Amino acid sequence: GIYFTWFWSRGQTLAMKTWGLRVVDRHGAPVTQLRALGRYLLSWIWFLPPLAALALLPFKVSGGESVVLIAGWVIVWALLARFHPQRQFWHDAWAGTRLVASKPLSR
Image (tube, rainbow, N blue to C red; front, side):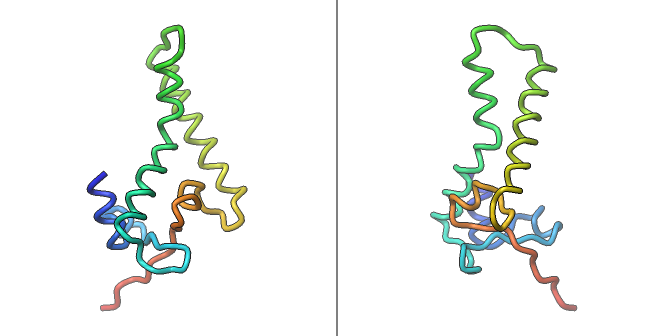
């Protein structure tokens, strides 16, 4: 969590820099470390529900079935962004953050 919190509070991770994305608050300002930490914790919704379901199931699930369950949840969760008015991921909406295209560095 330290990696993401530190880099998000500075605008972007190394991967986000490659993809031309930045994380900002609702008003377009840089996020605070506290807001970045909140975004990190809320981003666990991408994986925690299927992992918890697998742990709590009264029967064992094979590795392949686990992958299908987790991948299915991730796909459904990603598609739910289509229902957000600004087409943002819900963990960003709840954290008060959003992803925006970053301006390329001029040479």
